Length: 288
Image 1 (tube, rainbow, N blue to C red):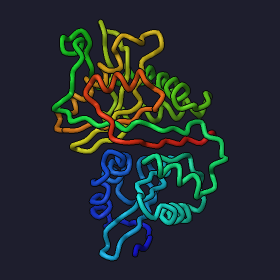
Image 2: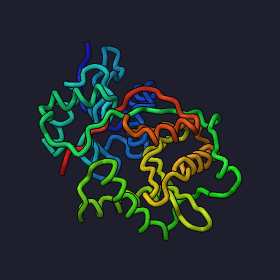
Image 3: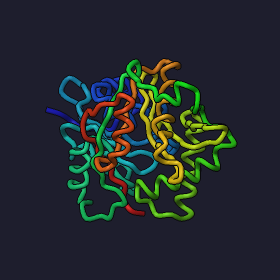
């Protein structure tokens, strides 16, 4: 038997103990929990959390409605109950989308009656993982022909524009003032956290990558972007590898990421670095 309730300050350890068993598909949840706890005042990374607990008080399923409207899932059982519980508490605030194991994002959309709601993205994603001790460093990066570094203040404008391009091309987000505002906000937050990286070639910034979720031992790669005119030169894999070398030097031992099933070029790039498939992730973004 299980019972469902909202999680509150003091429940962090039991929530993380459950999520840690599913780290590869729970990075958003675990990183948000570590950074923002179980308080929901609308600030970045905060959210309202609901969980199913067994008779021994152990968490066995979680759904969180995050500050940005996303519903984050790790609910191998009792998905219907935890999703309804968390959305009842947030009083129907708009759902921007879902992320989590693919079967769960599909089920959540169904149980909430949102299958007909237009989505800019409804994607099956290959979930990848890599032990950083086994990272294969591209020759150009190893030789110093290109260099990865954290972003600087001077990079924010360029990276914000690239984030707009990324969101439009890969996520199907409509261009406009709202996308520009959101892209800049995301880049500024990642820059301030030290989780945004660029690649330099002959003094020019040519590619971007970020950690969209981070734990002391695990990082999740996201937002990888090379402008169209600079593609097919190995820059994307170099910026990812460079960021992972920095993370490894700072104590991380593992990396995860996900990429669309149809994005063969990205899959080849990640596999060339040593990433291997671990499952299927789901990402749904509703059209605004």
